[in-house]
Image (tube, rainbow, N blue to C red; front, side, top):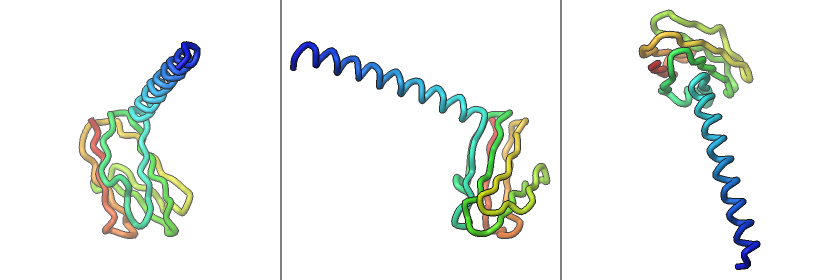
Amino acid sequence: MSSRAHRTLLTLAGMAALCTGMVSQTCAAAAADDAKVVIKDFMFTPMSLTVKAGATVTWANKDEEPHTVVSDSGLFRSGAVDTGESFSYKFEHPGTYHFTCSIHPRMVGTIVVE
């Protein structure tokens, strides 16, 4: 391999490492503030999610049916969330929060706030 080709490879490898680091930092920052739960196939995915206090969790309905997001403790309650719509809640305090779909009670999930 020529020295020019070798330098080009090293430059590209360095740029890739830099970009990967930047993406990781950006994703980590976003993850600390916001998280998403997808509603699909009559399931909450993920079923359990851990976030930091102050994070906003958004439930996005990708199913063909309306669903609700209802806290077992009554802390939050969405209306019917239709296909393509979402519901968000900001978790201010540490704790474990269980939720269900009041229309389809077998759909359950948990948010753990640290």
